[in-house]
Image (cartoon, rainbow, N blue to C red; front, side):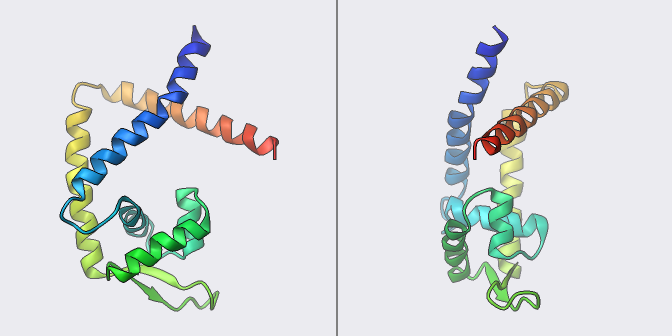
Length: 148
């Protein structure tokens, strides 16, 4: 039974992420942002100035794809490029004042939604679920790395 429940938990991650992405997308209506642009803004807001490789590492996706995401966000004027004294060909990306205001407003709305969604869940249940997801993710990543 344990293996069946764990298997289901792992496979529920896809519908969970699809539902979360749909909610994020719905929350972006009227902002001229895509989910991809929002991800870039969130990373730069949370961790400060970043290079494209830094953002890619935090999102755990390929640098080339993140470059496309960052290019879209640069065109919007929500982030700006700054020279990187450590690497000429990898500029630092920083939020503009407008970009900071936009992402902070979006995150505030999303946190209200999360509070509503989790209203019937206890703090302990959420903490346990988070611990389980982190442990399973770490274990699967290690196993995937062993096969490379």
